[in-house]
Image 1 (tube, one colour):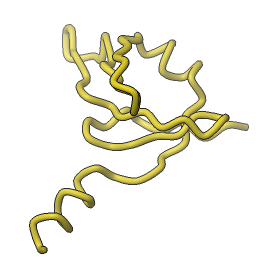
Image 2 (tube, rainbow, N blue to C red; image 1 turned 60 degrees about the vertical axis):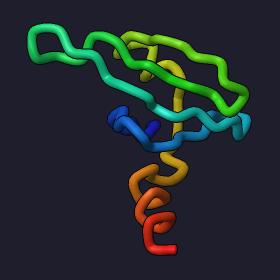
Image 3 (cartoon, rainbow, N blue to C red; image 1 turned 45 degrees about the vertical axis):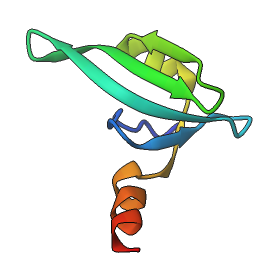
Length: 74
């Protein structure tokens, strides 16, 4: 059974081959997620629907907000 993570803007996820992807935005329609904007390290952007998000089989890598918090503390 696979763990499914919610797409959280600013958080980094890793796919099965270790490629990192960041959730840039979650777009809603009628209070439900309709599209998820992703950006890869090489700058490529992709939009997926919630079914496509589950198909990507991503694992949470590290929260983006945690990284921004540490940068402010320096």
